[in-house]
Length: 452
Image 1 (cartoon, rainbow, N blue to C red):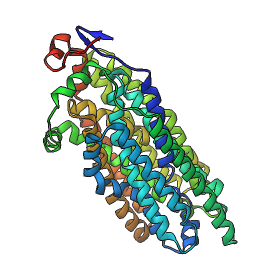
Image 2 (image 1 turned 180 degrees about the vertical axis):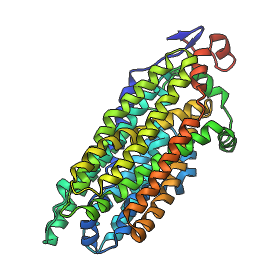
Image 3 (image 1 turned 90 degrees about the vertical axis):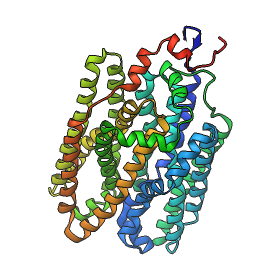
Image 4 (image 1 turned 45 degrees about the vertical axis):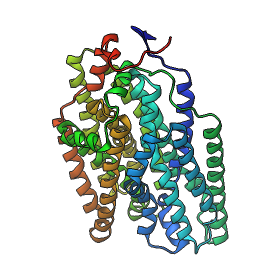
């Protein structure tokens, strides 16, 4: 596709790159809740407190906070393929260390391996935004984002159910050890295969930009420093309000992943495996719903601007309100004698909470355009992970001192506040306006002439 004298082209190759990224994300995010979903068993096997096991999941927030700056710098300076190879290498190293952590006195090895894998996980979000911006047009961006994060969701879902299937609860410690080792060997083998794919098949950015808005943005933000971009973010009221809601949704997901096993075991006897199945159900419905919300956002981009903002706001309000109501019902369901209620409510948790934080990134990119998608998504995820780390630490203290009702009630209040803030947040469709308003004459000021 050409506009004036300039080439705007979308390559079929974009789908291969996206599929490779999804494979990487699946394999990497499997590790997130691998231990916490069977918290009781892991705590007993390694003879460590439940809180230690919870932080094997919390590490995926903490390491992002710690390595935010170097990873952000690296994803901007290193080529896309180089970034993916580095991330895949870290995941592979961490996975193989985990194979040697299965003895009951080697919980430290398991914790170190989680640190390495979670560092690799840090690359996921910035690379996702960069990949979509480089290869996909604006009308495909929301769907591509949903598909890229499908890998993360599928991996998390698999991480909930695989330990329940592969790790046998037994009085014989040898059976536990062998089942853990088998699970880790499978993970490490898949990680190695993923690394080979990244080295041999993955490609960098295309020769020509995929959209007019992306073409203009490349030059408009050329030379802008991280500090300048972050200063603009801090002054944007719409972005700050969005960030508040987005961070609460993300923190809620991290808390559920880290403590779901403990919450289920507290409230239901003989519930080994139920936490994994509940988490799996939640993430499966999240995978089904996220592309639908992404499709809705892409459709909104095609309507007249006078209606766009209102319709995007309605999507945000639906997601935030659904998040509050579903977690409130989840809190009550935990206190009912029938665990089937928890299974049913987990469907709605998956639909609203995960869809909210996934599509929240697209809201942020829309508001902050022409700031780099990498910087925008990295800042949003950084704040989300920082809030998640703080909330998880606080939640654990409240849970053990005052009980799960008090801890969950506080989360309900925060999700309600997030819903209110979302209703008050103004939506600015800056990226959409740039895409629709860019003409060959305007782009000529920014782009060098390209040969057809």
